[in-house]
Image 1 (cartoon, rainbow, N blue to C red):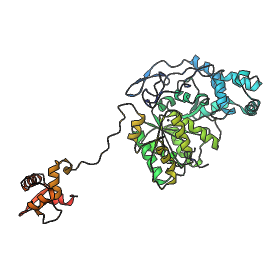
Image 2 (cartoon, rainbow, N blue to C red; image 1 turned 90 degrees about the horizontal axis):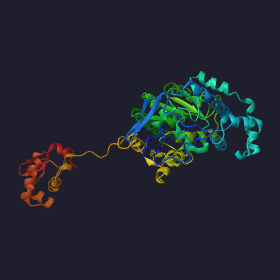
Image 3 (cartoon, helix red, strand yellow; image 1 turned 90 degrees about the vertical axis):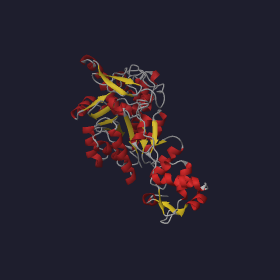
Image 4 (cartoon, helix red, strand yellow; image 1 turned 30 degrees about the horizontal axis):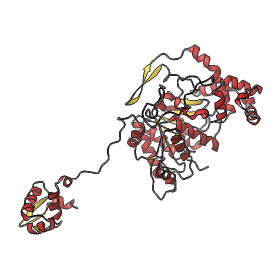
Length: 453
């Protein structure tokens, strides 16, 4: 498959939930977000021992609060273990399982699948049940959890303090849980994050732009999120890492796998300096469907998505469409009109589905804090002659750009002004260094002559 990355503001939502992006931006949260039920525990705080505090002009601040007790953590272990098992027997984005988990707990669901005692109200067809049961003999969630812990990772689930609740906008297709590897709180890192995606077989121009954008974003305190694939993804990750920034790689395989193999060193650096995450259990390998489903997590996790290069059929466009559907900002970087790899981005911009951006300042203005992350106003240089009053400028324009110059009478005819006024304006221009007298003639001063027209 010809993929991209192979294949979204603290200001994005007006939600009272403390771990939402800050209020005031792309639009309200979707009505299905943040639901709780037997299988969807209420959200936690900002991170272990911290609570987020947001104001209207800046990102949330972490303030110390009491974290969950050891007893509370132990009480969540059966749910975590069951969700780890579900991650093995289901594929990412399984909306049927998502609907079940809104009504029953994960342990109850696993038991029902194992015993074929799924309640009728869950509306489970025999074919789907058989598919789940086919993977039951290979389940060992304890070993999966231990395998990830040995790598310095963890398995986070809805209701955990580290769970980024913007993923709830995916509704029934939100992840059952996320396997992570690396340092830092996923929830806090995702609060100020932006996705940079694009073509896998990118051009030199695309790789350069992606790296520059990622480096600029990292220097402004943004976390760069991408898919760790070849091309634009790799360039974005490397750009953030090069300036000491943090980057998140969302994988279509287990976090213990390095795919693609050519990016194994890069993926290792991301795990050390940033964070790797995946819906897939340890040891799972990617396929084309998992790449596409992975893109929805990238779109939902971040404040906005920037597409650097994408052909008309590109996985990066699926990430952009997901971001748009989730009310995240979608942005695009223009490329040469002759480049097939920019045709998809141009189509997004032309249709109004994406906003044209050229640097990190413009990206930050769209997805950053209201009134603070503003891009500088762009304008051309102001030249000294731009400040001249119109009559003075007319006389200056009448002075020929040659060494002999012209007499006052000739300049008056060319400027369409009385000779007396022209003479007065010439002396003003002489004081400013634009012209000089040359006998009975007036000519441009040497510096003005070299930069005249």
